[in-house]
Length: 128
Image (cartoon, rainbow, N blue to C red; front, top):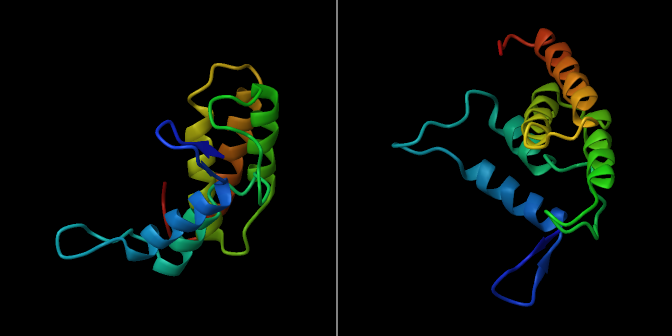
């Protein structure tokens, strides 16, 4: 969840994900190219980019215990989406987040995410 620093409000990951999905769906115009994958798959991947969190999480970003956060990211890596492109979009996001920590528990998760990403890409016409 996101805690506002300006107002007494909390935004759960699910609301953040929903808004992200809306923005992903609208991405692209005459000045900004759309993503180089099918729009529906991209939208799904962005919408479920934080899929390891529960529907009403109680894990404030930047405040949650790192072991709990790593377990959440593992859930995200191990929970596949039915669309391979969407799954890859979500995995790339999770992988990026894992690069921001030097916790030793992140290394095996990075390897797992990399393997899942490579396995997914091999099943498509895309390259990394």
